[in-house]
Amino acid sequence: MTDLAAELIGVSKRFGPVLANDGIDLAVARGEVHAVVGENGAGKSTLMSILYGLHRPDAGEIRRDGQRITLRSPADAIRHGLGMVHQRFRLFPDLTVAENIVIGAEPVRRGHLDRAAAHRAVAALSEKYGLRADPSALVRGLPVGVRQRVEILRALYRDAEILILDEPTAVLTPGETDRLFEVLRTVAATGVSILLVTHKLSEVMAVGDRVTVLRQGRVTGRFTTRETNANELVNAMIGRSLTPPAPKRAQPPQENPVLEVRDLTIHDADGVARLSEVSLSVHPGEIVGLAGVAGSGQRELIDSVTGLRGAVPGVFLAGTPVLSGRDPRVAYVPEDRHGRATAPGMSVAENILMGAQRELGSRWSLPRAAVKKRAKDLVERFSISAASVDIPISALSGGNAQKAVLARELTRPSHVVVAEEPTQGVDVGVRERVHALLLAARDEGAAILLQSSELSELRELADRILVLYEGRVVAEFQGDAHETDIGRAMTGATE
Image (cartoon, rainbow, N blue to C red; front, side):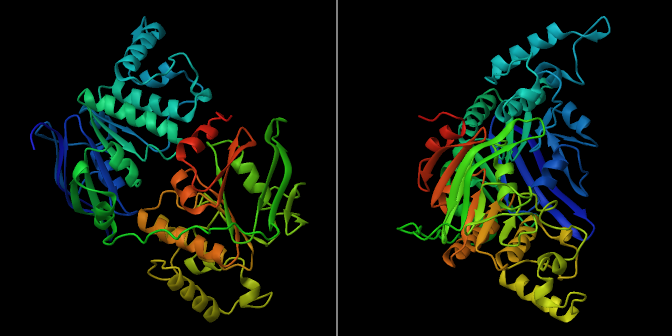
């Protein structure tokens, strides 16, 4: 391949006994969108961290424009024309757009920041790449999609010729994702190379020019997007095809709802309404999805339904009010698997059996043999990859930690399951397994409330989808509704 912007040749990186990258070759052409995909733990993040100077490779080399370079830090990477937009934005909320973009490379006049020059530079950059952002606006008040533009502009302001994007659509609505893809095509057309790290194969097919697939730290496939398909990529990622999703039920359940929310209103400490007269119901054997941009009231609703807000008027389980966080009748799969869902310093066995103490032992003691046997049974049943049930759960990959949480929650004696971003950050293989577990729980009669930022997930699993916007339910759709219609409702554009 001619006109290469960057090459990684024979790159290897080991962390103790773990070989994260094993002799990886990756070539990025000038002006292309090059996707890097793979399962969790495949080595994608390590490889990109090496290219951005966050890690030093144990073997191999990096070349820019054909010349070997050494990257000891991100500052070195920036000097060599590399920029990176992280999944979690690194902006200063109380500074303006212009101040965030030029920080560290400010135009100076008489020893002080030349704000007029900064505004002009940012406005010109925005115009050049079609990244609209008001230079004088405070970042704190910007929508998520605009904040991401600011991150991209900050890299381009530093003359980035290779832009690394780490899971860039994780926090975007469908409309914002479409606009981002337009921006990426515009930026690539100017000659900037884009490395897109994602686990969403639909995005790879939509915007990528070429794809490199990693599995267990090695390259298992290189593809030109127009000459491949999602199933071929999946095979390279996990070594097999995905099982077709289970069909939805032809008729929704008609039994009385197990979970009801009636005119729920929640105010924050400042008296601002975070939920306003929200009502919903979930029946046995039904999955009801919650869609909405971040901050639309999902957190307050889920905390109310699970009893984490204490006694909240308006939430009922089988007609009985939810009284407190001690109520055991709701199985809860939290979004934050390391904070809310698990105790990282405790073992896999202790985490997976948390809450089942009374079933396994007396009030005062737990029989070790019974605990270990039950934990091993659940590890096998839920296909959790763990060297031992005695290791800390923090030693598991994100996908296996998530399956451990599901193993614990879906085996509780409960008829209601609240699943919050159940496949966030996991690869397609784990996603398939998690979906199968939720569908099996549904088929066994569980009433499931599913909150997800991925509309494809809601459309695949949910019988009905409710859209939250500024604390209100503004629309309800059948599960097979078009993503565009749901996305419009998420931005408040309802008729």
